[in-house]
Length: 269
Length: 207
Image (cartoon, rainbow over the protein chains, first blue to last red):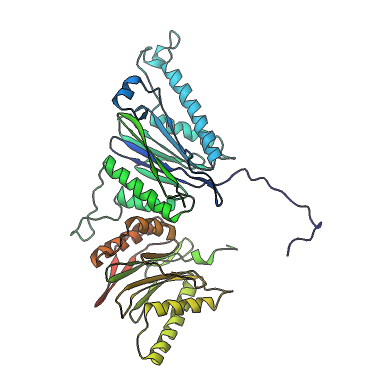
């Protein structure tokens, strides 16, 4: 029975969050990293758009020489691939906030400082400097924890190359707890894909035949082609079983040549 | 502790898959009380003639249901003088569950077997009020059903030979259980072919 009319005041509540579905996936290879996501954005059972972008390539300017080598380059090897999944308005806000920090950081790194403070910039060298993935990750932690009591409702994943040129993936919870990993899935399809990645990337529960399950299969880096196959398999699988995942798959690959992107159609039902 | 979901108190998973002239059904061995582990030998798969059924969900209901079905299976054998077919058993489970439509058993069973006449593999799953899901590929159930769906959807292919099906179902179960805190603590796999049934215990993580 509904509460008797007039017996108590009607209460209204504003909910500042919504769930926009979707899935985000990052894999690190030996000298490359991948960040991929589906392109559907939905609320409840409605689809807002079939082509939304959850990943932003935050990159220094791409030079003409780089374009000459390969026309489809969308970022340099010093880029940060920045992906958010969850409440997309918060994701966009976080992406913008980080981009701002990134731009000022790079600017300050490369600007000459006052006489007497040369040590701050390796004696005012002309060498161009960028933001390392380690620093990017720590900055994102501060952005997220800065809103500890009104959080950005997102699962964040960064991908890029570390200072040795090795692929790296950093993943964050909504309030800034983070970790560097070989692979991570975030969002609606995380529970479906994560065990698959445990098995296929980190070789969990795989043993060398004939050893009576005493010797684990040694972990080794996967090639780019193998990783891309896994990404596509993961997304086609999760599209099959999850209603908020589908429409399109956007993949960004970063290696020593820069960043390039791929698009593949997913089922639209 | 006041309000809790009965189907996730004890934890546990079951998965079944079809192959070429074979079916497999597997379960974990954990029985828990929320986060507390209580037993590591709680087998969720029961045998009824040549039909195998895995019960996930609330352990007390799973046990009650398995005993009720044992009773009904015995009566069936007495009346009909023959074993029960998996399709028939699925319908029996469905009506048994629906009898309790407004006060259901908090258990989601999974049936696996070979049809005696055709030799066709058969798997079926149910919700807690008896709606049959007779899939042609695989059925998952339990607290790590999301993880199992992801694993099965990615690893499964149709018409696998029994050795390959065994590997597929084992990897699906193991890796799904490892991403669920209240599943695991051992596993058992049944491989059912025309003239042989094998039961294998798997070595698993114990955390």
